Length: 335
Ligand SMILES: NC(=O)c1ccc[n+]([C@@H]2O[C@H](COP(=O)([O-])OP(=O)(O)OC[C@H]3O[C@@H](n4cnc5c(N)ncnc54)[C@H](OP(=O)(O)O)[C@@H]3O)[C@@H](O)[C@H]2O)c1
Image 1 (tube, rainbow, N blue to C red):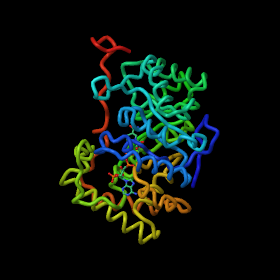
Image 2: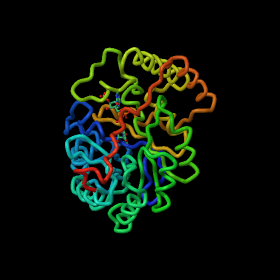
Image 3: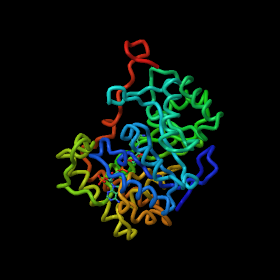
Image 4: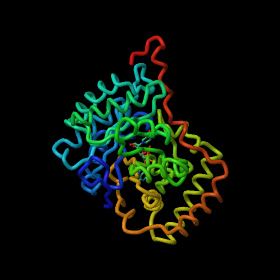
């Protein structure tokens, strides 16, 4: 396992993190807790110590399952969770107020069965709350020892600049995979310059880069892929064809799987950690195949040519953004 450092956390952190959104069930068509717990424990056994979760994943459920899975093994894990979404009517919206942060930290510590969180990340920027208020409250939590390190998620560079005027920032979490590369233009170089770790989410592009996605795969219930523009015809075929071409390239050039190539590509792009959303233990098989080799600039160029050849109508991950909170002055909003 390759490891890296996240500022403020003493333990070396694995460069693959287990993402537990699907483990919460919500927006992934349900969940099986026994399989989830087995997956989290298998991740630890495989050398993955970073577990990324969030209160909103299953409205507390993902954090609870992580807490149960880590019972007796807390010291082997680096827990990254998030803050600043609320869901008063069952629909998430942003709230990065100091008051919301105070409520959430206690809820998360209880659900995760721990006395501290290693990396505490603002889930989405909230334009209705000043950066000083959000960053200031997180810095207080850090000084109190309830969190070791502060991160943000889905922030742009200007928002990070504003945040860093009040509190030290260790990481930024952004969508990043072979098919979703917007941060190449700004967030990634910014992170490199500022010494931040980038937690790349959707490393497998919601399964498209797993090597197992098929044209006839059906999704049920509230699975977000029912509304993900990449999974809708005719665009879906373009992405499946691109994945097949990448799979051929990975096999021919490296004797590797598409999944290993997808993870390796992220790790070779900079100070990154790939968040891999496995929810069954068998989905972690082959985790080691991402390590011990590297892509050359020529390999990356060949990959880009394949992508250009197949993806004529690209779509981004923007569909996942929760709506902004209402302004604090709006009736019914308590901040
Ligand atoms: N900060 C944010 O706003 C944000 C947003 C999104 C995600 N994240 C974080 O990033 C993590 C990863 O992203 P993600 O879960 O959205 O997407 P992902 O890692 O791109 O894809 C997850 C899905 O890929 C499939 N998969 C995983 N391993 C596989 C394997 N070996 N073979 C076949 N299929 C496999 C599974 O789908 P099936 O089981 O359905 O086949 C799984 O649910 C999340 O869990 C979360 O922690 C953060």
